[in-house]
Image (cartoon, rainbow, N blue to C red):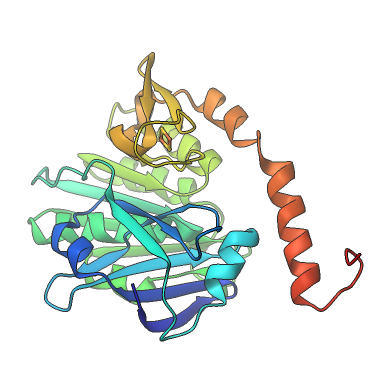
Length: 281
Ligand code: FES
């Protein structure tokens, strides 16, 4: 599982192209993998952001948010992952439905890309709303422009495109034209806000949930979410779900469970990386 290309898309966001022919042969939009850098490393779920069956490669995009992602992003071309398990999850259904609006917040552009690419190739009219805090954090702008009929960009600080939130633009788009489906991928509050806009018009809305995952195969229950009053596992039933039916309140609470441990592990790793001896015995 060798890394054959690597580039920095934005500060702390790295794109890796990895030789993984068996996974590339079966990958479809919506699939993800679980990677381990070493035998003792944490298992990290990552969306397959792109794949090339002929080259036998998959593309993963990693944002450094904690210890494990920091270790992954320090890998170089020629380095290998210990193992990559996948493709996992339920593929996203690709149909001709008419006009599809894809909304991506921050790193959400990575899982959105293969879905809108396939929907574009299937003959849908595709509008993309891409948002980030500031211009340098907008990723896959050119790639998304190439698989859409319209690309609308927003930044929180107004450094590029519309100043404000993706939901401002989404509201405008659904008021101006008939939208058949919305796919919203990004931080949980962003997806919930998108659903609040589309619910008013009863527009089918798909969200991709990044619940805490451990095994990635439906065994541990760590990624349980409630959709339409039923328990679902993100790793086998998702990660894409009907946004209008997701219990976002419960999802927000579950996401907070491990935030303190993750923060501590990351700080410990950063101290070690910067040569700090404060934890040395
Ligand atoms: S990650 Fe364990 S059940 Fe989904």
